[in-house]
Image 1: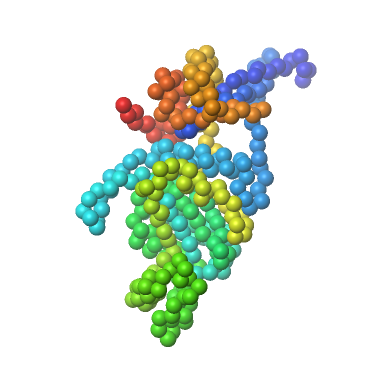
Image 2: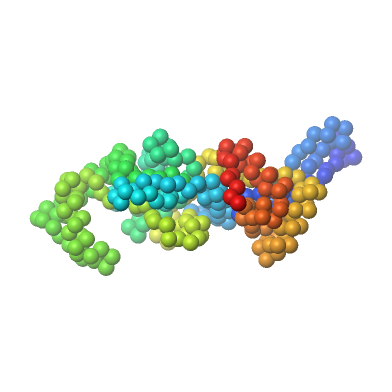
Length: 330
């Protein structure tokens, strides 16, 4: 094809997310006679992966967490202990192996973690989640999981223990505990700094009562008093693993939260006018690179600034992608 038969347009786009607005351009190539567009986005990429969180992965994890938190509604749940209700929004869960790891990282993820998410969807209606794998000091893999559903701690532990025992981890734990306490209670001197004597005795009595079939392999973090939840959970999700690299994937999320493009629209005149308002009010929250500009702003601030067109692009995307209707509070 002759060069004079082709041409291109540089089209400005805006992509709106829960805590940012991205501005970028796209080259749309076309044949002058047939006008068939071929799109090439002018966005840099980072595909390197060496067992650590790359800059590209950092952005993807941050975005997935942003959407999860944004769509997590406040819920009132009854307290079986106090007979009162309490507010709840998200769960931050840790899953560990009952005893030292004796399978590969990929086997643990394929056969145990995947099964956990299958059961979590059925049992607790968990749809949106983000997970991160890390190594413990003993070299065993464990997982941090953020989701927007309430999971009772006893059900969580029972479910995860049953799943891990598919590979024999509860049985191995039971054998180890029976052997260690064969002559009665023995204190673990090396753990006294973080696990006092009385607590060890209490754990021993509980373990012996159930014949060591319910190891303490799970934890639900309390984030009720955390002011910046996003910052708190992101710290766990993106920190470098100091105890060794994980084989294979080190993080993931449900399909809907992966590679989210956001509410995307061509920056036509009325949107450009609103972008000027945003840039003026959030001048110190603007980051510019050679390929794109990022304005750090919370989506719910757009309406306060009178940026109705920008907010509509975002809210329409949430409805189309997640069937989520944002509740406007006055």
